Length: 72
Image (tube, rainbow, N blue to C red; front, side, top):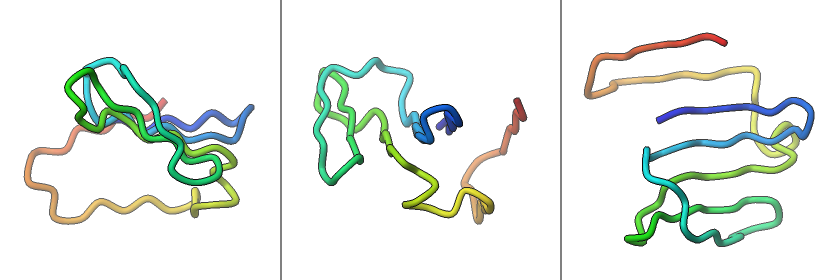
């Protein structure tokens, strides 16, 4: 899973899969779910992210695998 925040558009993309998106559905104003060709959830796009979620804190807890972090 990868999280990417785009400051210039105030959007957050949560990439859940290495498969490309084949279909997108807006489920709420500015929240779009991306699905791969098999119908599996591939990503979540959140527009105006700073007004919808707290971008100042990020906590991971009880991850079932080794954690790798990359700060860009």
